[in-house]
Length: 151
Image (cartoon, rainbow, N blue to C red; front, side, top):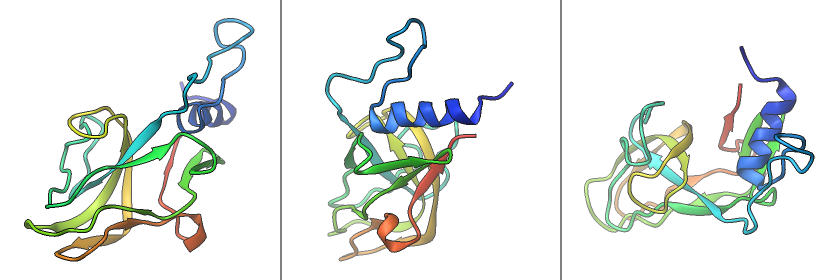
């Protein structure tokens, strides 16, 4: 059994935009949080997979940190069962370490450690991380937005 397209969009808007889902449980529905909060973008050198967490294949370099993104439509746009970054999201510059090639990104619940990985996707193109590089996930303004889908 699969979810309807309408419910997929409601679920994405609940998770990424903190919107209510009406009529789940009672008339007030499944409520968004009182405080919007953030989700955290992570970079990965391989697919973290459905069984992975935010640390699975996560890049490690001097200066790296996950990027907080507020759960609002101003930062995460939901349309047609797809969530896209509205603006470019830059990660801290590499100042040391071994670097590597980022092939995937994740969206999870924790600023650090093994938080719950909600969604992951491929980067396009891959991002070569070396000293002095500021990794970037592209937003809608570039025309090649980083996105995940629900289906």
